[in-house]
Image (cartoon, rainbow, N blue to C red; front, side, top):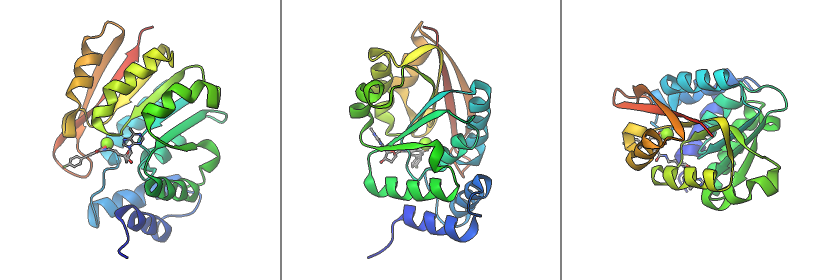
Length: 214
Ligand SMILES: Cc1ncnc2c1ncn2[C@@H]1O[C@H](/C=C/CNC(=O)c2cc(-c3ccc(F)cc3)cc(O)c2O)C[C@H]1O
Ligand SMILES: [Mg+2]
């Protein structure tokens, strides 16, 4: 049967990247998406903004929602200090399998816990299952209509502390209007928009960074 796009992306990594070299894995995926097949990775332009926010926060605990093929997982994990707890959530088993292989190819498997499941099911259990009290950094890049319900779950289950930073992809394209309205109008967050473009295109998109004020 025909391969899937994630499987073809994995093949491109195995063919063009250097095992144990995260930068080469990132470049191989970006090259594949620019020259072979577009895919919904955060990409190199928004990826640089992601890098700068992760570096600025220097988090001890990280959560990513929507692993997909592991591109942003590799971008984040390569910047983390030793001992950082990084959980990434993916509910599609085929995507999760490709992501595990791409993360391992980059040599970052020991820095990442990939959890298969739906974010709405997992978030209420994270404290119990992983011994996390609060997350210093959260990257939202899953179904766009899940951003708002999930940020409310973070609040409900006390997973945000004063200074926690949430970074949301695609707030313009495909767009997350309800989430944006919430974080920009809630007195509990200080939000800032980082203008950029939809990965591998000239279409406008951007990232929204929201600081939880406690
Ligand atoms: C609730 C939940 N729990 C766990 N994993 C979840 C989940 N919802 C999605 N996921 C997983 O994340 C991944 C999905 C992410 C959704 N991202 C998107 O739909 C997405 C779409 C586009 C886009 C833009 C313009 C276009 F013309 C076409 C597409 C661009 C992006 O950067 C995206 O992240 C894979 C899925 O299995
Ligand atoms: Mg995205």
